Length: 288
Image 1: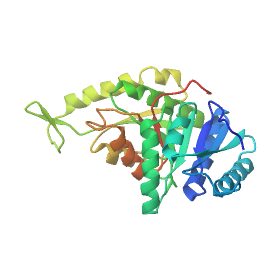
Image 2: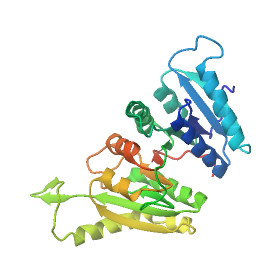
Image 3: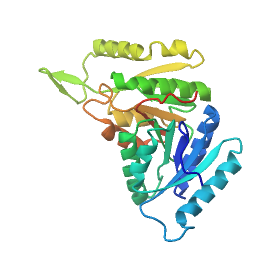
Image 4: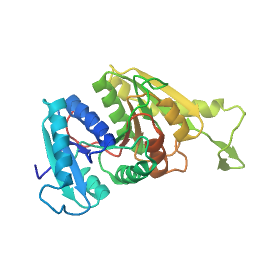
């Protein structure tokens, strides 16, 4: 098994579970789309008692599956000892993308994987994609990449990532800005409101156009839809992304995610989204 992970690889965490198998298949497709090497990474909290421990068997099985399903992809297997989240965060410093699985049904499994994926998504340096079994390919986001758009500067890498992903996969892109704001006596509150929000809506539409400016010209092959929706950010984004190929969210934001840091929103999306979720911090200068 290889020792050093090649810089610019698509790194996928494997643990022998069904959800890591979904992540492996997604990572294989991403490596093929971008002509990047694939690194299979298994972690243990402690050294195995024998030279051929469970970690070795997990990697051997994953490597066999990868070579069977992606013979054209340059693939290597890696084993690391230590805390899984810490090792995966370290991998994000040189990877093009880190891909993780998320349990679909088991409550305990989901809690554990949610904790790891939340830590990696929060502290990672490259895009982190969390993959779960897709209940359906039907829904509002079917056949599309969905972008969670906010008005912060940190959203720019997510916008670029979403356009590039849509172009590579020849899919349409839906940019969604979720908001639920009203001002009472100079204080921002969050509650239903039946007043005339036409001016606010117009300002938000202009914000969306500003955030997307230039990217439509750079990716003329991508058809872009703009959705301005009112409601809780996580709930609205989950609804908009039902059946989507991918939901893309920035590292942190306000506007669409008022008062919330990455942890609160991304954790909700990672737990409830019906499609793979990409949390984008910054884009490494590797590959197409």
